Image 1 (spheres, rainbow, N blue to C red):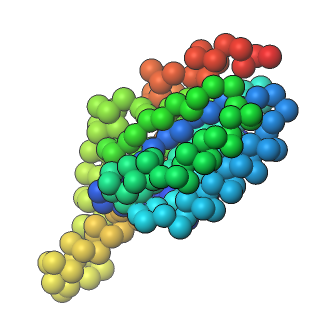
Image 2 (cartoon, rainbow, N blue to C red):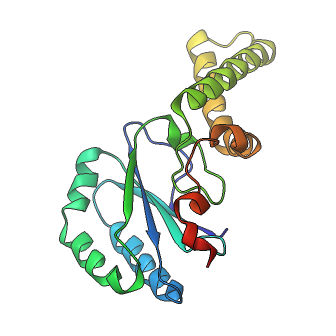
Length: 204
């Protein structure tokens, strides 16, 4: 699956809100839709509170694109949703898609998890997300704190804590979570709707 990222989508910002948009593109309209989407992302990047976007192109034979937008607050997201810019682009996209888009807002733990290809909505069950993060955070705190005490035993406690937290967040965001999510996708997303289930006509 081809992914196109705009701005920083790797680290969830505190208080940010993520919106997942799914659109089923008409057969043969992929190039025009992608051009439309590229223009939208370019113009959206100028909006207040815009933090970035990621586009997941569908795997054959599916024609459902997943676009993930992030804003720094619900207020700025709502401002975008009420804007003339959005209305203009919604009118322009009509010839390229089969139906209205499906919008999902995410503000919780799911922003840490990257859904596997073919998943309609990247939202694993919350208790599974919490359980996995509790286990990983506990393990990292134990390991990193022990290392910090060995390598820098005379470092002040607040600074040690800062280093441990910084290393933990970076490791979770850039190294651990992307891999663990892929390895445990069969469990994390086991109850998440799949495109072949929700869109049986994708087999065309």
